[in-house]
Amino acid sequence: MRHPSPFHRATPGHGPVTRREFLWRSGGGLGGIALASLLSGEGVLGSGAGEGPLPPGRAHHRPRARRVIQLFMAGAASHIDLFDYKPELVKRDGQPSDFGEPVEAFQNGLGPWLKPVWPFRPHGQCGKPLGDVVSDLGRVVDEMAFIHNLVGKTGVHSQATYLQSTGFQLPGFPGMGAWVGYGLGSINENLPSFVVLPDHRGFASNGPKNWDAAFLPGQHAGTILYPGRETPIADLFPGKAGGYVTGEGEAAGHRLMAEINRRHAATREGDARLDARIRSYELAARMQLAAPEAMDLSREPDALLERYGVRRNPPTWPAEINAAEEAHHFGTKCLVARRLVERGVRFVQVWSGNDNSFPRRNWDSHEDIRQDHGALAAGFAKGASALIEDLKQRGLLDDTIVLWTTEFGRMPSSQGGKGRDHNPYCFTNWLCGGGVRGGVTVGESDEWGYKPRDRANPTTVYDIHATILHLLGIDHTRLTFRHNGVDRRLTDVHGEVIRGVLA
Image 1 (cartoon, rainbow, N blue to C red):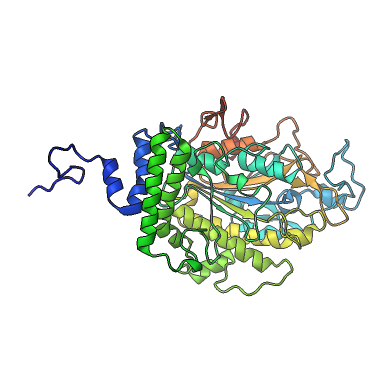
Image 2 (image 1 turned 30 degrees about the horizontal axis):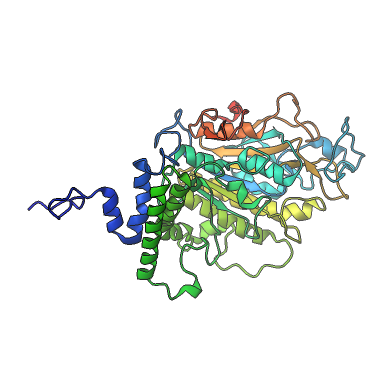
């Protein structure tokens, strides 16, 4: 016997039920929420808002990578103490600094030259010198490409953080992960395309504005997750005080929201904000199943947790900066990042350091490089090296880019004897993974690590962003969004692909 289609009315004399009506009438709240995708596809909510400029599953050219993990050191990590070895600083340590030109320092940190506070030793087949505090990276240094001639535009934390995160120094522009999600869409519809793992102590400069969608459709904003917390995802499930919430009551609430959204959409054709809001509800419903599993580290083997520096039952840490504590927290975020990209998240941003802690728990080491950088650097190096090894072992490194960055570097001269001032004139990034040539250094700084050796040809954040997009199969000049009469893009009107880091 042939059964009638669920899209066909049983009442004689009436036409067939549309898919839209069927979704509203069946499935309770989730069916109603899912209507958002149908409305968008039928043009009710606008012409493909949020679908991105590229056809699903396609790119401008053959991609070398599908995913990105960005490691952001908030507060400005010192390139000359971690990655960019300067023998001249060792030779001139303690002598009056002389840059050969007037220098505008952020806090007058123009004391005597200060040698690297940790010895440097060569690592890997490439022989790359690394500061001892990040020696764990020596195991994977042959996978990494270093860029030592990166320049910024400002020594102000908030502006410089915006620049690295969004390509602009002012608020109101989308984060890089939002652009990637907009251009390529989601790999796994049950998880966000862009996930942010903040420092466990709080946000860096600008907070969520670093990963906002701005003028892009709202569903491309970063979703904040807190690994290790009792509730890693805010508001995904009812809190302890909401024990009275039943499944039936929640479904009724979904149905009410769906009805309100339907009425709202009917009077506001083409409003992409509504589309983004409904999509967020739809994603939240799917995440109730997918996200907790992705965040669950309980089944990871002890040996792997140990490599990341993660403890199943961490002790109560002392008040002073502690390398084991930093390794546990940063390693946890790195391991969750691996699990997320493994499950189809397109872009994961991992933050180290926050902006307002005391004693200092960020990278802004004006007072004491050894004290401030020590635990943070050792903890990050342990987690990052384990992440790269883990990705490689699982076959994920071939199509996952790992990008390490910070807002600017630090001066080769001393501040107060033990610290270093801001240096926006030169700093370091490194990359590895999908399509990146490992074991190389591209671009040099001068003998002090003060400015690029070739000042006429520095590397900029626009070049970094252009290269990341290129490896993902995107031409950075063609990924645009019309806003206020301007075709905006991540790289503004700048940027060249850094050919020297391409495999």
